[in-house]
Length: 283
Ligand code: SAM
Image (cartoon, rainbow, N blue to C red; front, top):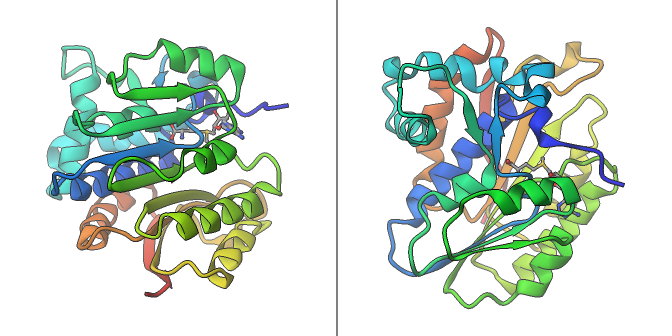
């Protein structure tokens, strides 16, 4: 039974980290004409009203997108500025109004979809899938009410020369860390050049280490790791202290741009907030 609903967390610091990374990857992929298939294995509902009951309950966006939105005219980093302008384009006409809508990964993946590209979205929660079905997305988008990891395997090989996959489970079950590692290992076996983004939570129990170690033990190469840590983990006993992203086969030059953007935004997310990046597995 699925209980996680992303609406309670939409626009939090982890979404900022994940969606800015997705945006940076796409910007680089679009430098070439050849067609791309995007697959979002855990799509969520696609668009979040920040004034809705779910979002106002925990108000996590106040520690995520909101301070960046307030400071948007002061940023100098071009990637960060471009990302925030894309977000601005989604809001109601009055640019001075407070942020009311925050988009999920289906929108970030779809916002620059070209005629030659395709987007596949998987969502298994019936309510979330119903919301997702109601979203306006480009015509070359397919929404699947199905398991994302099994669906990913079924879609291979894709018909386009390039493939970009986002895996963003809720990790409600501990076994999901291993399931993700397994699915990614199979995927890379069949599509060696795929660009793959995997999100994971930094939690004191450290289960994410199982995912990292399983990937390091696999044949998969060129895994870049980016972590945005809100607090020092040694003082943490519960709660998510950071957000992690792995990017397999990152487009050349993307990492430096993303690191610049993260360095500029981190101080707005808290005094102790730091971004760190390295190659988890080299070429
Ligand atoms: N990727 C979304 C975003 O960035 O806006 C957020 C996704 S949320 C963290 C995880 C979603 O995966 C939830 O909506 C949940 O219902 C869905 N889900 C859970 N298990 C799934 C599965 N096996 N296949 C597809 N979706 C699943």
